[in-house]
Length: 251
Image 1 (cartoon, rainbow, N blue to C red):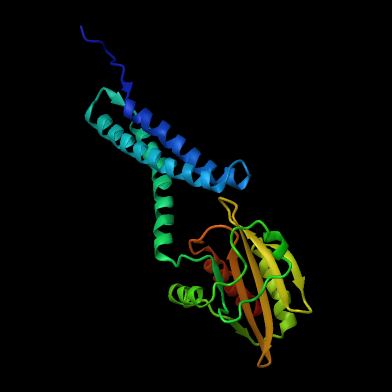
Image 2 (image 1 turned 90 degrees about the horizontal axis):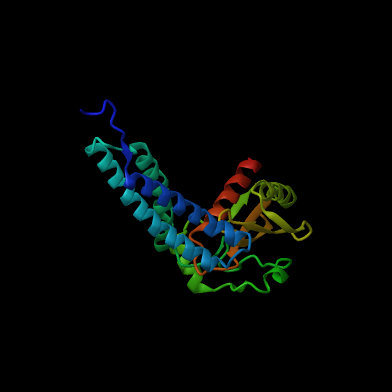
């Protein structure tokens, strides 16, 4: 006599896939958070991130098998677990791969400025970078040419407003962007600040220089990373974002 109810068992692939996916996601998050909080060196964080991708790939493959098994075998359940495992694993795989793709597409530099011939110089931030691997000395024509090829749009902003007005607006924009203001020398029309990246907590330093020009002002900005040979386009994006907001604020 057949039982009226047949108890279904959860597919091992569905369970294994979601567990591995969650583990991969946790490792990926901790890779950057741990580096930001000083639990380990960012190099260890990168290694953890790499391992999280491998685990996520295995999780995705296992979850796919879970989807197949639960659809083909009537006695197996866990379809939704397998789908969730796949959904969790996907961004853990995709985000670092997109990051790696960006590294290959942008110039392998970490010092970006609107004035490559006479870059704005840091003053107040110099002591804060005593232990930084990257120097504040500009790399010269080689770096300038790489920037020109990779970021031809990074140019000074020329506005009709007086330097004092531009200075005040620039200070507001920098604060709105969450930058830590290190120096605001209105007599010299210079602002220095530090921006900290969200995930790994990398510190990049920024200097803004405002000079009178043709009854208005010219704004130059330089953004440089303290560590890392490539900034993955972060400094250029920071400059674009700042200048766009400043121009909008000044009308």
